[in-house]
Length: 276
Image (cartoon, rainbow, N blue to C red; front, side, top):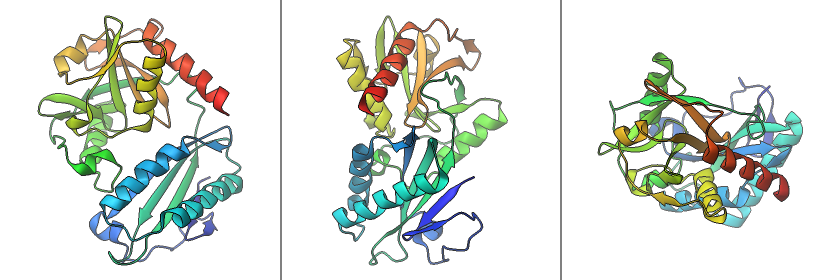
């Protein structure tokens, strides 16, 4: 069952009428959020999440005191985890305001999920070209203007795929919910932030992990043709970790024969276990 935490209060009823019509996020998409993974009862990568969240809030000119706001959100996260007795969960921390000059507030939504880090989660992906991505300062964080991603998700669902690939100037940028990587000749490649993709926390973790493991890694532009010819493709976000791709349009891969992806997944999981 989902658990909600709003304005320092817990709500277990998803139909609880707590938000007003003056909410700027509802009226104008004026909001920013973070998706946080709870792994074995603990929220992960909190420092990185707060760093990206506050970067976005400062850019959007939110009127807030960083230390106090972080304390409130942190308390809310732990109270939510306890209230839901969550072992593995997906938390969405939504920050919003009722007026541009007023201090912001936040809503935490928590839902139980499977342990994707220790079980294999594979994906199928297809192209979405109806709406291109544009690289702007907003691209670096999770703001509430998500129509391109929403339309891409609908397209993937309608065509029988898990994720849709988004493009920037005919170059692969990311998928509807995840950053994308491809492996070619034992080298790892991922689109640069200049393509308008999210500065994903798991994306950064995987790049750092590649460097630690002496696996060549580079952010560079590539096309759908190069993606189709990849030796391996995998997707990343904090909820699912590293997710191998088994199908891209009509091309398929044997997920039991992805040496680089498997090596990275195993080492990521070990790193997470050691950090607990």
